[in-house]
Length: 181
Ligand SMILES: Cc1cc2nc3c(=O)[nH]c(=O)nc-3n(C[C@H](O)[C@H](O)[C@H](O)COP(=O)(O)O)c2cc1C
Image (tube, rainbow, N blue to C red):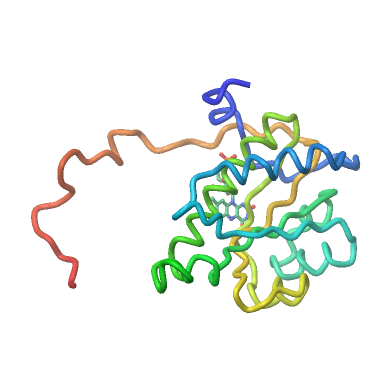
């Protein structure tokens, strides 16, 4: 699938068919995450893949009872690996780069999921502690997204986007610098 088509046609899918996903497809999706850019090419992220119904239910509870999470055949818990990024980049690695690495990988995987005829939704509203407890995370892994995915059972319409004019600022944004050092 053409990359522009994949980008514009990908939608957040929150209704899934009760169909298993072949392992081969799951690995193909994860491979696309690995090819994302990352700070120092450290690839400071990890995933936990959940197909156990009891753990999926705990994730649903952690995400304020969004039932579509436990209804997906697989849920990915995408984590920023703070320790890995901090070994080279210290605080900036721990607080920023590992999250950006995970987000870049996450977007690649969302696009791959769509291109393979599957659907997914990035879920960011959850209690981090409850997620950590559900999938037994060590302290250096920060969960940044839950990504339930599966064969789509809905075709959402594209939600509106901002006009480019509204967000592009050539050369400078404002009249005075107001960031304190
Ligand atoms: C950082 C982030 C957090 C999000 N959190 C949630 C969430 O908690 N629950 C949810 O249903 N969708 C969530 N979404 C999906 C957005 O609602 C969705 O991407 C947006 O409405 C645009 O729709 P589209 O993905 O179909 O283009 C999140 C997306 C991002 C990038």
